[in-house]
Length: 375
Image (cartoon, rainbow, N blue to C red; front, side, top):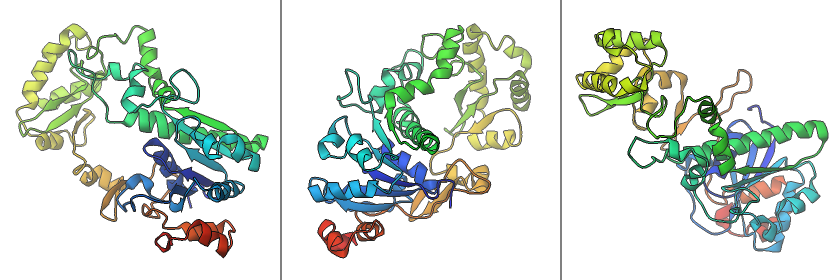
């Protein structure tokens, strides 16, 4: 059932962080209806972030389709959209129009730059948003250009995850006030928020401006990745003295070689010692050596390997469905767990079913979703 069972969400189809937010809500039991364009690619059962919801195909350029969405909003709890500012208003589905039909509805807006500000209506992608927050500048090796961290920081962490958090907070507040509201989730804001601990370190003099010169950005000998004899890598992170001592002992190294290990001036020499040592065994040999220890050394696994690691397998951290590997719903709940209960839908697959559930007549359904392929 999930902890969000009974919550109904309309998702105006977009890409990236919006669908990720909708997936998070659907994984935890919310009923999410994905409203897609009437025409376009059929979709794929392997599009993991679209799981656990149904698809309704509508042509929102038609007034009757817009009215259908407004009618559906009357009995929904939230709406998610991810267009540039002004697009939903031009469609007739902006917050004022929707919330006029249902003042209790929470309206979630996912953008890169936010609903206002001088860049609000400009195009952008994850890398642009994290560039303006200081996050991208801090990532990468010394003397090298900043390294994009996939699109995890802007799109998904600072975007979709923060929008889900905001929607749930607004729904919780609605139970007290009886009123919904608009949630303005900007990826630039979210990425900046994720940097709060690093800005705190900077304020206390514990983080320098130079990339690749700080304890957590790969400069420290005890917080980096090292190549192994097989060409694979291990991740090393024994920050605390006891953990570091355990690593050195298991590697058979002389602890005196690492005196003053917290002094940045000594990190290059210490890294050279560890690099030479890790290069003597394969990744899997090191993994076996450190198994069950507090040395904070882990094999760096590929996406193909990760689901099969014993810990991930024991916790069912990954699930296989319809030829795709799915990260399992998270976090975990003791009484109302989330679940992977439905595959990613094909475009318009549930159009007639969904419209019928919202009380549309057969004639209305046929007018809105006439294509038999949408049944």
